[in-house]
Structures are given as structure tokens and as C-alpha cells.
Length: 175
Picture 1 (cartoon, rainbow, N blue to C red):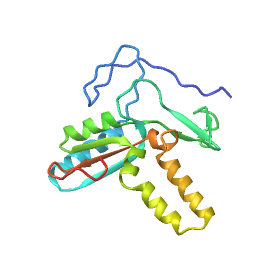
Picture 2: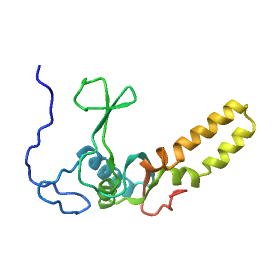
Picture 3: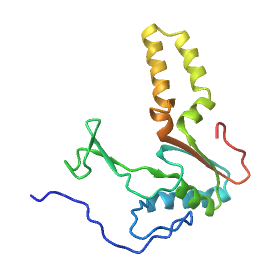
């Protein structure tokens, strides 16, 4: 059996919702379904009061390159090895997603880091309140979990938070 491999195929440069121009021969990830969701929510929020909150890992500026990655048994793996046995993922392009939603009528708030968002909502204070009434082992687990979610060297910097709202709604808390 032949090893699976990705093949680069030249194509016309896509039109990106944030209007950026692409250099020839660059690699860009474009998630059309995500842009469609941004447009759909933007249209809906432009006409019906509401809000949508997104938390995921990704980048705050549109980047070129490849962020596709695979994890198998909590370790990095080659994306095409052991098909169906690894989790495949790619970073969210929050800039392109926001541009699609904004063009369709939504107001955009963020994206901010998950750590900044959770800390602004009081994660550490609430963790300490819970830890004060917990066993030493449970208190350590609570603090460790909060640290994992908010610390810049852990999930706090890699994950981003963005809200889409109807145009007349105020800024959501912590954004």
C-alpha cells in the first residue's frame, strides 16, 4: 500500500472576506463552512436581537501557512497516518470569520485570549472561593484546572474568545 500524502495543486487565489491580498505560491487555509456560518449569523443578528459566543484555538490575525495538525493518544501525529484514529484540527481564522459576520450585519467583539476573558469574568476569584471550602486535594485540583484554562503558557493564550451581537446590543462582559 502506498503512503498517503498531501499534494499541492495550483489554484486561483481565493477572495478572502477580510480583503487581504495573497502572495503568489503562498499556502492559505480557508474554511468556507466557517465563513458561511459567520455570514448566516451576521444576517440573523442584523435582523433579530441576539448574541453568539465562540471559544476555540486559533489566531487573531489572518496568517498564511498550514495549521492542520493531528493528535493521537494525546501526542502529535502525522495527519494521514492511521486514518480515523487521530483527532484532526486546524486553527480558526478569527479575523476572516469576523469579517464575514461583520459584512453580513453583526457587531464583532474580540477576539481576546481565553485567559484574559476568563480572568475578567472572575475565574481566579471564584476558584479561590470554591477552594476555601474544599478538601486540600480538591482545592489543588480546582487551582490546577483554573491555571490550565487561563495561564498564557497553557490554554490561556492559544484559545481565543469572540462574540457576535446584534448591532444595538452592548458589549458582552469581559470582551
